[in-house]
Amino acid sequence: MKLMIINGPNLNLLGTREPDTYGNKSFETYFSELQFKFRETELSYFQSNIEGELIDEIQKADTIFDGIILNAAAYTHTSIGIGDAIKAIRTPVIEVHISNTFSREKFRHKSFVSPNAKGIIVGFGLKSYELAIQSFLDK
Ligand code: DQA
Image: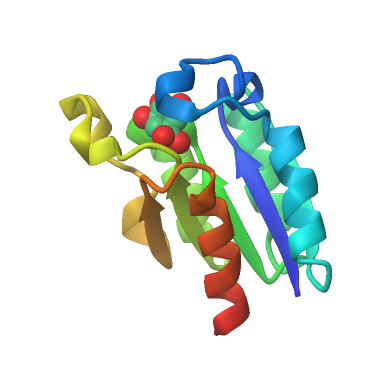
């Protein structure tokens, strides 16, 4: 099984960014833990702060990967382009968020990703990614 994790803007700052909301661990550290935990799974990781680069990566991942785990971060709430990219590809996408976006500001309740996602995992901290991997493996 080949899975691609795609992270959007500001998630490169995990570990130092708003630790009360997002925790103290960098994604690089967490990604190494994931690779160890899911040794049988081929995990790839891409992060960008640029909307178009995220769309390019979603398009490139199509058919090459068995699944995409996408945290589009702030673009979740604004990007019709990312929503359309998910609709355009065949590879299933699971939307994840570290924080519970529904218990936060109203503008975080809207997602352009959700309507075309296979499923949504929200609010379990970094464990959200792990739950998404597990759900692809369980299928
Ligand atoms: C986030 C939630 C978004 O609202 C926010 O813009 C992020 C991170 C999360 O994982 O909780 O950058 O996607």
